[in-house]
Image 1 (cartoon, rainbow, N blue to C red):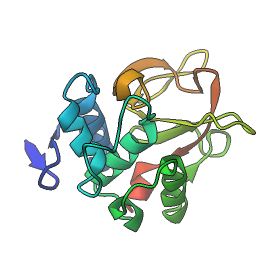
Image 2: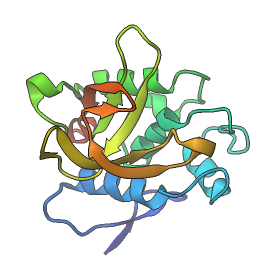
Image 3: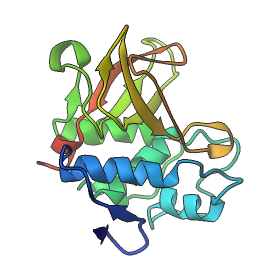
Image 4: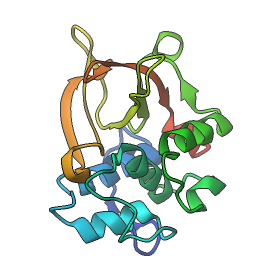
Length: 189
């Protein structure tokens, strides 16, 4: 079964009974763009990140880290309802906007209090006292094995690439997982 969320957004294939609708949408949306970069499917990636609001020609370039911008676009694509997602992007605000949206929807979770992230969650990594923020989406259920091993993916790679991999989700390039944003709460499920 194929479902188009909104015109100009990628088709989302629905299949797994183990995930709710929003979780499937996030996994399929991120997976659709894995492998995209400024060198591969660049125009398509630019249009997606622009969310129909920003100029696709200027929203990203080789000097921009796009992990937060990609996350905003995914939330827009899966129909998270928040006015910020319809605003023109302000340079340097992507992570701040993600946190603000999550707070407004009571979607902020902490691993020590709420347990490991759920599929579709946006995981926020940073070192307290540093400006080293990074966000990734959880694409598979975490398995406890000397950490929490799962597939995860998103932006922030070379040339604004979108990638995925399987590793311990408690850390990302030396940064600890500080909080995660629950897609079900964001979509008011």
